[in-house]
Length: 218
Length: 218
DNA sequence: GCAAAAGTGTTCTACCTACACCCATGC
DNA sequence: GCATGGGTGTAGGTAGAACACTTTTGC
Image 1 (cartoon, protein in one colour):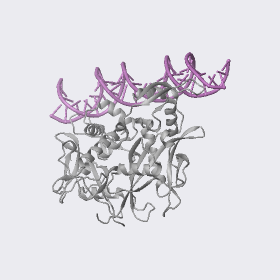
Image 2: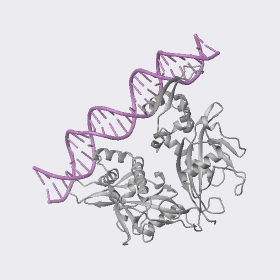
Image 3: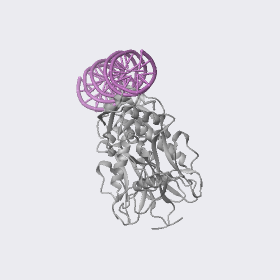
Image 4: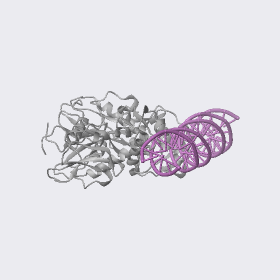
């Protein structure tokens, strides 16, 4: 291994749905920096690439390390490598983005230096991480339109209302429930479990299970 | 700069249209390796990232270095960083893809270690470059559907017939000329120059100029 | 005239949008 | 009963696919 002009890091933008005053909102976990530069600022989970791990494994690792979570979807986003990205040495960051299920997101382990923020109200971030989050959000919105990626943000079983709420949270606008239902059913990726979710003061909605295979979400 | 577990390289998949037995075909330039490993094999143009250049500049540079060409479109493709990619040391490759205009592609400078090949008849490639070309081709096909990226493969002025040939070459199937014309015109990114291309033994087609701005092709 | 590609018109279908309306539950 | 979301039906608009047909050139 020779002396290099740049070091390699892997960071991950993690999305999860959380309740925020009665409505579902897209959130992401950030890590407070405990070292210079940008000490005390919030940053994306990440760190140097290890010699024996693939890029994807590195992303999964810093996801697990910082949040204790497992990803329902994990995919490379983009590589950021401008000459000056705010660190003293040159760093090339391969950024991944991940989706975690709400049931899982609720189990994040307690760490004062890790916190979830709504994407539309982030604190100032370290380095160029605001730009990176912007890319990730755009990608998420796009992919929502031509894949069933949204299923990865929900528990194993969910109602079409919940699925629609996820879409509304990501797109930032209300969707017609009737049309949304038809599109979802027509995708052929949902199986009704037969069960219904009781408890609410309305007609109990049917529960569905996703049959999308992760490999087909490219 | 510290000792690193991986070195950083930038490679570029360059696409151009060339005539191949009367019909337009997608071609790409390869470089014959003059060093081990994979000595003598064909490979994508690429090389180590320099400390003072951005990733994009590196891609543009190895495009110019190997072919003398200028890109009409240049965009990051993907980053390949598996632990063993066929080189003795670990290399993380940030791969770009580029489109060059046919008029420009014709001026490639003479170098016995550089040659253009049709994408559907490539020689065996070094490292994991076959997989990389596969990614690039898929991206090209996809982007054809929702952007005006194909304009970047043609000269400044072109006929709708030529544009259609480019699409047919990329998609590998014939397209209905009538429907293609309507779609192209409806895109609002073509201005007729007023001139027509004479010489063929048919009705002389109108010449168009693209008004797409490179920034909008994301 | 004939071949060949340019260019126009028409029809069919699929899908999306908007919106009216009924259904089943908790209170 | 009434409010609330679940779920169905239906009509209009738009875009693409298929294909018939006219136009303009070179030979």
